[in-house]
Amino acid sequence: MKQYEIWWADLPKPAGRRPVLLLSRDDAYGVLSKFVAAEITATIRHIPIEVPLGKGEGMLKPCVVNCDNLRTISKVHLVEKISRIPARRIREVKRAVGYALAWDELIDANG
Image (cartoon, rainbow, N blue to C red):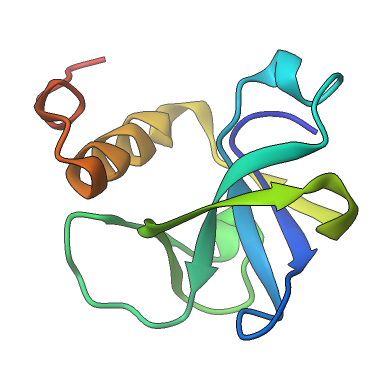
């Protein structure tokens, strides 16, 4: 498990089985049992807290990382790795998290 990987997760209801984007730092996965993740959804609203995904990221249909839906996920809920966000797109994730948390320094970040 690594930061910016997309995994299938079996989450408690009402979320259920869905893909999630792992956000915790890489060294956390070896020592912690819970991690920060963002839910991925097919509900696309075209707002700044979303990062669009598609076949290039291993998704079967267009969807988005919804950074308004950050959650802590237990390791036991992570089922199968799907893919990883390409390095060139990590800035989009950081910017979307910045919008979700009103952290202007991430919204305006250039790198």
